[in-house]
Image 1: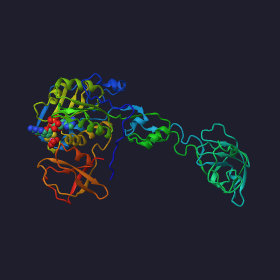
Image 2: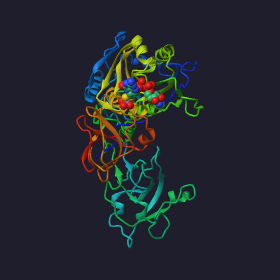
Image 3: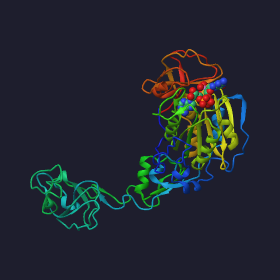
Image 4: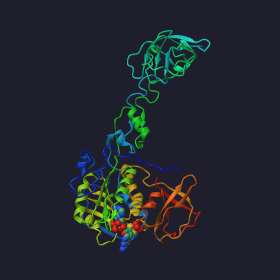
Length: 485
Ligand SMILES: Nc1nc2c(c(=O)[nH]1)N[C@H]1C(S)=C(S)[C@@H](COP(=O)(O)OP(=O)(O)OC[C@H]3O[C@@H](n4cnc5c(N)ncnc54)[C@H](O)[C@@H]3O)O[C@H]1N2
Ligand code: MOO
């Protein structure tokens, strides 16, 4: 079972992510900090859906319970892949190619040696053996990158290195191990360095084995020829594909770019990691989890950090960040608390639907569009496990959809449960943390179901799915498991 999909790392545009720990401070600039302002304009309508300002003041609380699948579908349906962008090939790792790449120049670009040895005429080494070696005059040296090539005449040879052009007159290469390397004795195992023994490029060499015409020669165009298709549109670019692009001379390529995802956590109780934790305060972990998760999903993610429950500051922060966002992700403030300013702010900035899902954790969710370009926004619950599980189920697929990557969802496998699950809420799909053993196909629950249990979350590599109509599961039963790695 494959456990990975996509997951390429940040591209050169991201550099060190701008981390704005204090969003109200001066350095909390928008796109100006990313150095991507011009690129942004090229992507102005790339928000994965109808462009234009989101209609303000239509935040809706949907009263009925939504299923996990309905909510996920609703998000995916409203997003389309970002417009293509031509970017540097290394930045395109993990991205989907949107052009057919055809070969302009042949590969290899010239006939070259596949071995360190001697370029010879086949007739000169015919019948050669240890008892009756062919004795040839070495008329020069050809290193990889050599421009000037000595001619190989009858009875002559040229010492040649792997990757060096085959000189005119030569028809085959004999590896140095088939020769005396010019030493006058038996077969050698290596070639002396030119710097220490320049005489190796001249004199005589004894060849102990015959070589047929074409032996150890990589012919021009034997890999790909001009006009051939090197990479097909739709290919996901990994290391080998990026290498091929470089080999055929492409420095830039047209792909669906990584979505720029801005992560903002909300809550007046939040402090930065390392800051003193005063009474009632807690370190902001969500913005780190979600930024890392967004990068893991293939996005170019910017962590803005924590914004207090203050409508004006949240509005300022979001308006400031919108310019560099293809997708906004917030955590916190989506429940029913008296200090939850998130809904109030989104009401001013756009159209976001808040709804309750038949799931645990992750019951309260928001999704919609805000700002002048109708930037998509996922408003996740603040409980750390809820935020992460919500990300995996809803935001990761959204990022993959924006990148044109399919399938959008994590792989689900069936696994044997090692320990029973005593109680699961009726009518809600529960996602419990677990450790999946690929070798045995077993899944073991990790920690309990509390939405605040981040230590157990960090030990898990999978989510155990307990369906809506199931309230307990016995040990040994087969369960669906969402693989997180
Ligand atoms: N009366 C009700 N109360 C709650 C309900 C409900 O239906 N009725 N739902 C509960 C569920 S379920 C969840 S999930 C939470 C969601 O609450 P919010 O999205 O409004 O999140 P907060 O209240 O801001 O925070 C909840 C919890 O998580 C901690 N938190 C928040 N942000 C972070 C962060 N960045 N890093 C670390 N920890 C964070 C926060 O301190 C709270 O402990 O509502 C329930 N309540
Ligand atoms: O749904 Mo909340 O996310 O259970 O903790």
